Length: 206
Image (cartoon, rainbow, N blue to C red; front, side, top):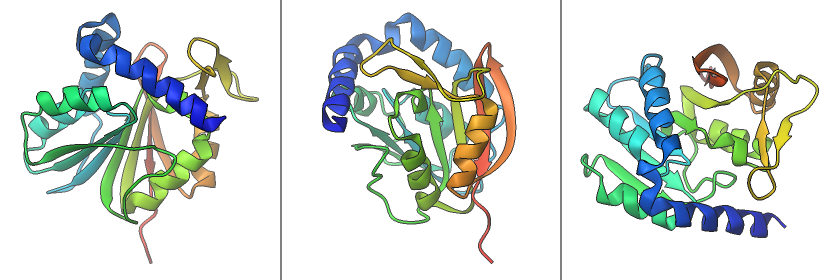
């Protein structure tokens, strides 16, 4: 079932890829990225991961603002990644690989920061994704989760607008999911309408 779900998602985004940066949602993403950058704090020569990177627009903006960072974009869609590689203006600092957020192909503590922008709502196993984020974050590293939120507190709000739907989480639900993975919630910021940035941190090692 999970395999079929991922296959359907991959097919959907593969089909969108050639025109994705010209679709209306990409204009919204540009505004979200601009607001997000106001809250990003990275160490010198940071190594970062963008999960669900799509065509790589966020990594391009981060690499421009932080000229000494190294970044990896991860996505299920090979066509999205092809578009990201074609528009990569920051080689070799930015690389793009195909992979699944529920089983990240990286070592423990590899990244100083992880980003997820309007992609967390697609995941069937959010707890597994957050556990993987916590694993690949270095001690003291941060996870920037940007997604549409909901006011429903009892359970995620499921909207049937894509294969198997999308899931929206309230600020409190995000905090609980993060805590279960060992991540501390530092703050919430509304970026654009119901689009909420939640910043998590992995506790420093003793």
